[in-house]
Length: 307
Image 1: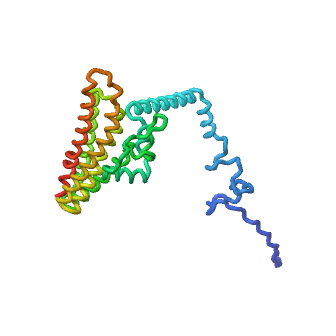
Image 2: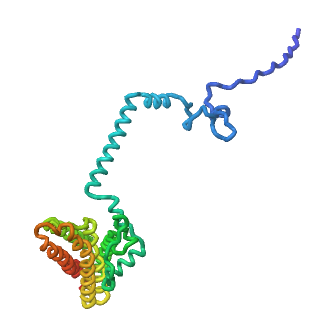
Image 3: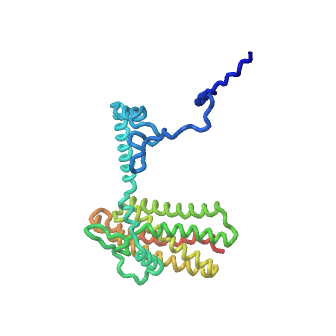
């Protein structure tokens, strides 16, 4: 007996689920981003780094500031810094008055031009008296007779640059020679100011001169030195000596007329003291000696630059 084959209906295959054991090629980040607000920024529950606000880091910072010992240490450090700043400012004010130093740099272009003309050609100037306003001298920009430190400072820098150019033209330039030239010019000014202070102290001369005034009068010689070196570079040795003679005479005339208003005008302060009759001559000698010393320094600091 032949049994006919039984035809079984094929069962539907079950859909295979995802293999959890196989690694994913790309991470599913479709639901990882936090919701966005209307302005395109993250909601307030997140910080810049992605950590929620109010997490352990913020808690540590808040605990640090809430700690009374840390607050006391911060306050103590702040007070020490303020005390140190006050001590430094006080020590600086003992030797250098910042407000008075600002006075000597209160200039403008009009004053600079007038002062340079006065230094080069002072013979026609009539009024040499410094003007005051409520017992305070006017600033240089308002009075051409006032002293300043701007012109001496700029003239010193210009002299150093001109000296470097002169040495370069003569094939004698080197950083060591230029540094020696700058230091020598500066040291001579300091020595001159110290000698004047010593003379005024020994002779008990009371005047309106301050150390800044002395540096200003001593630094005005740099203008004559520039004029002298330029004369030598342009016209040779003959031009050098002509410029040296002119700048020296102009500077001596300027210093005598200016210091006369500062030193010789204060005779009334000690006219009743002992030796009062000799003090006018001593003050005159100081003024003349200061003026006569300028040509020597100008020649000493410029003669080696011109050949």
